[in-house]
Amino acid sequence: MSRLFLNGDIKDLRTEVLEVLSQNFQIHTSSDSPLIVKEGRLVFLSSQNWQVCVNFYTSETTYMRQSTLGKKQPLFRALGIGKGVNRVLDATAGLGGDLFKMACMGFEVVGYEREPSVYALLLDGVIRSRIQAQEADDSEMLDIMSRIDVRWGDASRLDKLDGIEAIYFDPMFPHKSKGALSSKEIQALQSLCSDYCWEDQVEEFQRLQSISNAKRLVVKRPLKALAFGDGVNHSYEGKSLRYDLYVLN
Image 1: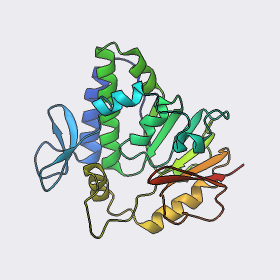
Image 2 (image 1 turned 45 degrees about the vertical axis):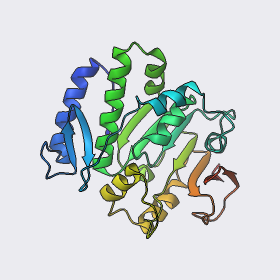
Image 3 (image 1 turned 90 degrees about the vertical axis):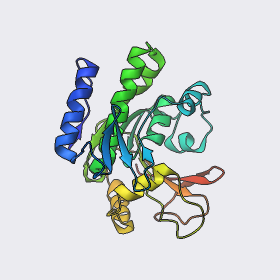
Image 4 (image 1 turned 120 degrees about the horizontal axis):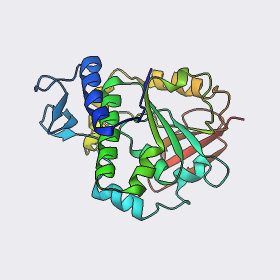
């Protein structure tokens, strides 16, 4: 497993990270790879020539920071905000969208991503956003990003993780067979994680339930979908999604 440490000069670190990613994840600068380095960013380039990268410095994320999100949102209620939960394991970090929301609300988040290419995109976005925050002297953003620790590996294989009080699990929804296409981010994830089948996710969920020191396991589901597993203690519903809570200890 690999993890991100932010000691020393952050720009030197980003240069080193790109070199390591290129060596370990077969990232190229030509169009024959879905991951390329373009204009100083690591991007997923689709066969239709659209691209996706991880960027926590956008108008959307700026609004997210300024609007305080609201402690009553179902995700945060499910995680246990205000109930002594401070450190969360995001077992399916993906491109970091939910991970960033948690950090904005003050949670310390350890994000694990098992797919190397997705992890590479996420790691590049975290480092680049920290550089931007440092250059802008944005102390609020630096504080948010300091609560994010991303690691490469399968979180469900852990026996325990010190200080973790809640686990967040966001299984990939089945591919849409018809109708509107998913967002480009979802399409990129589906392309990069094509070998990650439903049975794998069920087994991962079952293993996560046995991580000894966690108190809560939260599973993200479409609003009308069946529960991912038996034993849901409570569901926190939004407009299109819900968060099923499994009390572990």
